[in-house]
Image (cartoon, rainbow, N blue to C red; front, side):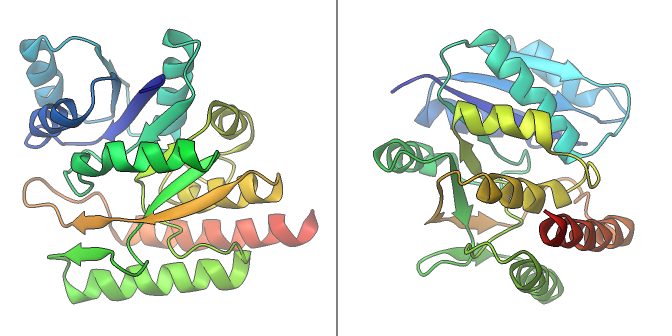
Length: 238
């Protein structure tokens, strides 16, 4: 295994975080960075008590959005691992399976990719225990993103991704211009595609959280729609 690191943005994930880390370590040993924007200290207490090696935890002062958290984590990974060549992001709520890590990393290297997306919408992918309302919203969001942005991928909004170092550096310098929330997932795809980075997808199993609360709300959905319109304007103006 080459030089790999994982960034996990977290918000009120004290019920899931330790289980996720243990599952990751059963499948892959690498540096893990937790970026926690929770208003409470529960996640911090759990992480510090665990004393897990090669795990770095950062508690930020306020909720500044998933995009901001991932970029913060990428900066730290590149700082601590100068030779890193695969940077991974995944959700803290156990929706992304650590058992897919090695297979996906192998696919990433074999195809010399800059971005590999774990897609929920390829043949063979599955979405487990999502309510119908979330399925409809996700499908509509991805259909609208593809219509407006035109990048040939099936899943613009899943946060299980694998990046080359050069792609991560581009994200750090160019992205997070349309809001720090989930819209950055679509923004990243557009920016990397416009710069001719090599992008691909791989089938993935997505499981709805069983513990903790989702951070998705009406405000975030509206912000994402506004952000998508901004991305469309960026696309047509450049």
